[in-house]
Length: 330
Image 1: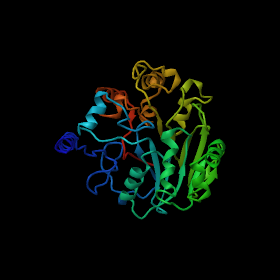
Image 2 (image 1 turned 90 degrees about the vertical axis):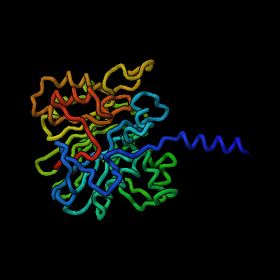
Image 3 (image 1 turned 90 degrees about the horizontal axis):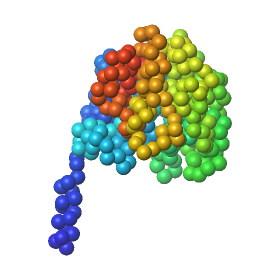
Image 4 (image 1 turned 60 degrees about the horizontal axis):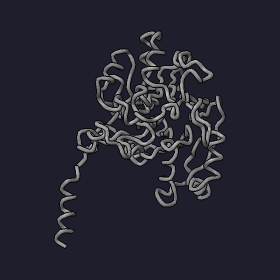
């Protein structure tokens, strides 16, 4: 018995007290919202619709399970906070409504952060991009065994809708009316208000269970492109450069920094545009267009997920790196 107690005490004494230093959930009630210049914003100062970044990590978040790399160790040693799976939200102060994009495994933290900033606002819907684990599995938190939500609108493409309807446990959410599925069609806008719309468009990705879409968010003359996942820019039927020219902001897939991040693994099995490839491709864009580009959806191995020389290099070339809490005014 003495030995058993000693083992427990030793285990407790060696556990690291990891502080949640992520800007998404500050330890106090201060705003986590920041503008493109890094200035803190108060929600009460924002009167027009805006997009806020709720997560910047690849599907499994940061740190990722089983990660023993140096930057993951920084988390376990309490030096840095977590980074949540990629998600954004539209916030409309005019009718006190919010919509989130993707139901990530971190949805409870993301909704808590949103509620902390705009406590009286209601969640009006969830837009899904595709059926990879970081983008829809958070729906389970709305279910019978968790939140027990009632009729949350979930917007999805046809294959994604069918997948949720016909496969458990997601079908239980439909049957219990925790969620109400709203069908989307590629290139067809969904009106959220008379001036605010969301338009899905197809992008090539590993579509094992559903199609994959990006979204264009439009408010009046201001628009934002959101593409957290795509195989490679060159295999898309559209020109990413032309799409960037049409919008004011472009939140783009930055999963991997370069091809050396996963030694021993065939990177062609998990295709994404490497940030170094994107920078090379976008090098002919003018400074104004480069400033529109904001990389997001970082793998735990990507040095851009934390402060790093690589992040500084990307910024010095005129591009931006997403942060949780970043506000983009529409």
